[in-house]
Length: 313
Ligand code: NAP
Image (tube, rainbow, N blue to C red; front, side, top):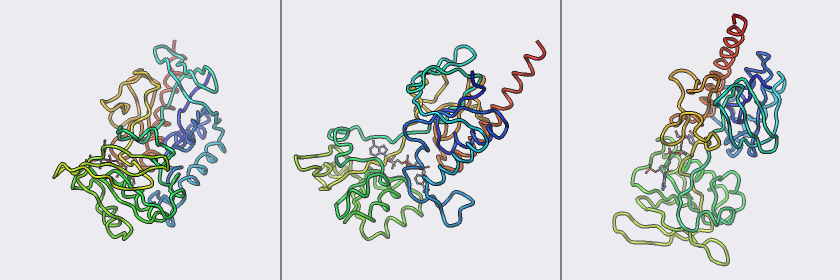
């Protein structure tokens, strides 16, 4: 039986691992099939304090992992399929590992990219449709690309893709962008970018020779148009990875774990949540890391209280 199992290895899970390992709690960290989380799919991280010249996302995560290992955190690869939080110790069914039991659990499974849900999308993932510019941008040298979305992610992805593509068209369903001013300004100043605003994506069209483009409806006129492109990058936000919990922990309408204000505590004693899986607002590496620290401290306190209670039985 483990004192603590941490599920997920983004900045939240790894920070929790560093703190708990340093407190001699020997956490077991379950690393999924995308270790390091979303930061491993970005390039340069420019806003993580302490790196004045920026740092590669993958390097930052690899450093955090080493730091946790140095203090005794143990890593195992697997995918948690279900949990039983109805009785203690808590049980996790983990594909690739088997059944595990723990006195406490920290959930830091992050969030995954959303899809548009339009025809032609899912079946062309990996064949011209992508949700990760840093993973797939390289394959589109000299090609015409479309990025869908109006938030910071879309601006960032589009800007990154102009390094490879001959042109990048940003398609957004409204006239106003949701992105922060600095990201909008940067994108608008980029000469390789063009804009299709107030356009609803309808279908990704592909033929025998690959992608043809994105069919959209111009919302003002109702007219439909095929915007030609060799690749479509979908950058419309994320969904929290909480499906495996099967409702064992309280979540909001979108599936984000609910934590008690100012803490990382869920409605289940001894189960804590940190990072993007419980944060629909800030979603930054630094806030995820901060919440990972909170989860570790909350967890440590919980385990101490449990021991104390046993001593006084
Ligand atoms: P977001 O802010 O939620 O933006 C999602 C965008 O996708 C919105 O413009 C939305 O349109 C559009 N969208 C959503 N569903 C759609 C659908 N079904 N069809 C068409 N369009 C759809 O998500 P995000 O851009 O991923 O950013 C998330 C958070 O991370 C934000 O807090 C952001 O500031 C942060 N972030 C920061 C950086 C950075 O600072 N370097 C980089 C990336 C992300 P509407 O506007 O019409 O709702």
